[in-house]
Length: 180
Image (cartoon, rainbow, N blue to C red; front, top):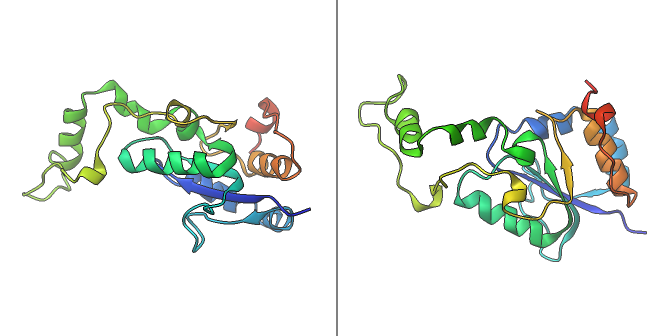
């Protein structure tokens, strides 16, 4: 039996979920023995295989047009899609922006900060098209597994990946969410 292929990517967030993945430490060897890790932000391959993978993990919220494209590509190429961390599950800290006017937030971030140079301006590059609201992953694509946590603990990630590698959908309960 072939090992399941796993890919991951990050959207709007801090990359802490992938750092927590690396916190598996020596258990990474168990995950590597059970799976075929393909594209990730921390490998040379950056996109899931065109012919698809078994599991995709997406960290971060939907915060611009590029994130929408990545989420849709990941959904198309993955049999099982995991919302990886609080930002993917419900928008996380970046969703706090939703309580403010977008133009005000952009002015604050690009013009009114102490670190902004005297010619600071809000970028207008179409690739940075910012939606009015930060969205969770399931607001844009179908999600099969929700792995909350900011970031999820290494134990919860290990449990999730080993269950998926063995063909089971993980039952993520409070026991896994409370591990540190």
